[in-house]
Image (cartoon, rainbow, N blue to C red; front, top):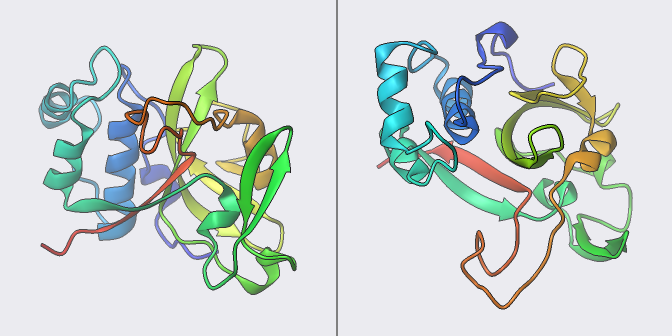
Length: 194
């Protein structure tokens, strides 16, 4: 377990359709060690409007990333792609191509990079949902995830169980879909030192 932040200081719910903004605010807390603003306060409401998230989509989330001085470093299609210092291996699961980090057990020789945004499919509200992985236990292969509205134990869920909530990866002729025509499952956040 890497993250020493207090779990109850992460935002674990949302007021509108601002899940990407909540993820960005949680990434800010993870990276800088302090909350940017209180949920529901005037500053929070201004952020909701700034990224156009009051009624869904967060079309201008990049404005929030810039304001919070966080940047999206990398994008990954598979949980195994975010592990450091390993070789890549492609494999198919349920007809979907994934990239595993190593032919050997990648979890025993690698560590996950955090904080990590994960895109899930919300089966209750039928739409994409953004959450933030803030901790990882390599031995048990479990992650601690904030703003995830499914059954967890104090935020912890087995990484394999989390895969049940993935958005299917696909490729299409439309290259405007979240980058190269693919729906990314994960995005890594880092401090923007600019």
